[in-house]
Image 1 (tube, rainbow, N blue to C red):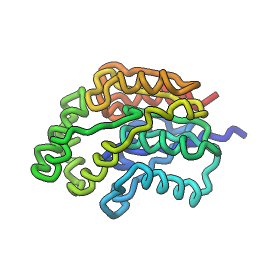
Image 2: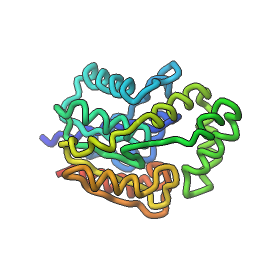
Image 3: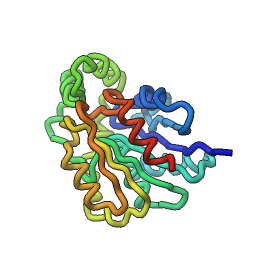
Length: 232
């Protein structure tokens, strides 16, 4: 009997498990996708975590509590930093990494961090505008972003700002797929290129006409990449 590979999906800053809805609909028969809400996001109450390490501990507990074995870990942006850090902490039981629109270092402009506290609505609009190549999707993105409390988004971006694993990428031992939209402004293609060049046994794929939110803008293309990577 064929056992479907399991892929745990970790969303980005200010997102939720719903971020992966379009992707999951593209693959319904061959992959067991498990999209999770991080603390403070979606259906989980709170103001999020202050560090990537705290989020990693949450994912570890999720895996243990749900008795998940031999899985792939996929993360977008903040979620990619969490997935990458998870692999550096423990690779047992992990079959591979899928890093989407992320980097080994995720510095955030001080104007964004300050703006979240001082002018949340306008900063949220600016962030979302940067995230999409298809500007028709911006208004819905803003609506979803503003569901978050400012403190949650500030904590997410602060965690990204303090994240830096540029010197440890060679320690990653599991097969890795790196994906980035060619028009990504938030985490430009040079970030993904750096990941691919410094992670052993990695593959790099760019998706045309997509920005930072590649799983929403180009779910079919993203699904094809993931399917080719996890189904042997």
